[in-house]
Length: 124
Image 1: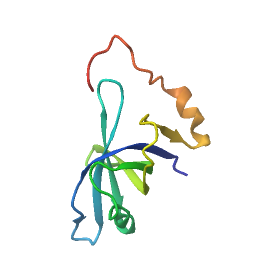
Image 2 (image 1 turned 120 degrees about the vertical axis):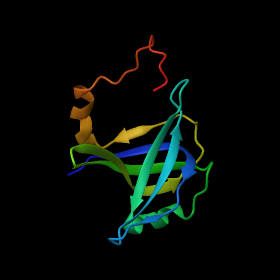
Image 3 (image 1 turned 45 degrees about the horizontal axis):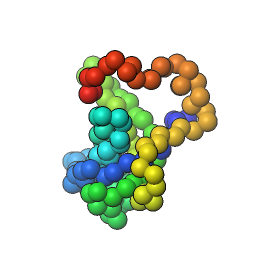
Image 4 (image 1 turned 90 degrees about the vertical axis):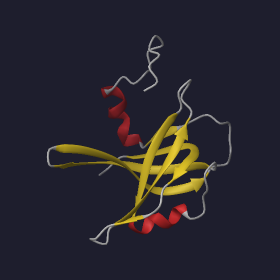
């Protein structure tokens, strides 16, 4: 079972729906999340019937996104997608970014040390 995550930020960009010859459709959007000096721009995608959840939002809205991470391989190239399955307008709260994981993901935190090094000024 895939782990689920939640993230709050500001809707920065909203792309047009893409429909492929197979009938598959997706729509991508970007959420800006404050992260010290360098805000993070995270691109999500909605597929199939989830595309309609973007109808009520506009650029600049505060949003909360529930998503999972999907990975695939094609011709020896690897791809990672943030698959959004729920999007709600934020409440404008305290402006602090939050990323929440389900309780089953606690082993993830112990596997990776993702605390930033204060001596590292590289913006990416």
